[in-house]
Image (cartoon, rainbow, N blue to C red; front, side, top):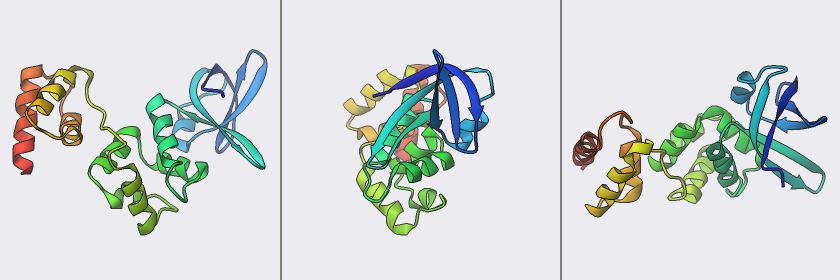
Length: 184
């Protein structure tokens, strides 16, 4: 299994990049948003997932481990293959995806080409509770405190993801409690 590639971008196409690693060019399918951030002859690090099918072996590339994990989760949803999973990730960044799952935002998925009402509901049903909202690194103690106070972890993570990571822990706790109180 190829987990990451680190090399030089030698070719760009409409949906893929060729990364040269020690004289070998690996074609990696990437999202259009990711493709725009890559430049010919520049160094690139891609987090990858190899998908083996009966008639195809493909590498899919991502800008972060979290994006790759979201791709893996999307591929567990019935009816969603690698191409549709890439389409979803093209239309949403990592935080938007996590927030849409946490908020059970069906419309966010329906805005993606190829995703209808039935598939959007299936994504939410399948992935509910499997995605954790990204929180600032400084908020881990605040997360523990909120959980000790009886706040559901998904709710706590969703609230903390909305806060400024530059706040002190006490300021974060105060803001989080205020937001949780307003939601009730």
